[in-house]
Image (cartoon, one colour):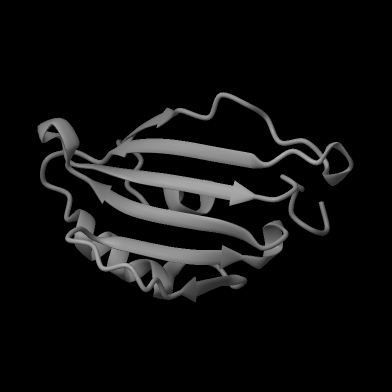
Length: 114
């Protein structure tokens, strides 16, 4: 998730909504990370999300969803994080324009090589 945050201007407000920490596979626990990012009123969220295919580091492979949505969304498999599913969406609920980042991992393992 930090890779997405690193691509944003430094003045964005990141609210980490993750309420658990990752556990190793031996515990059999799913890890879900969740960030709500407020980039400010003038930030073009759909353009940012569309650019992620080209700007995320190597190992983030785009995925295609069969579900059509009316908002900007990008899905990736993050190979460096044990095939974690990374979902980045535009969130306009409650009149706010934010970026919602979810990371879901079977095991919550750290990047390989660390």
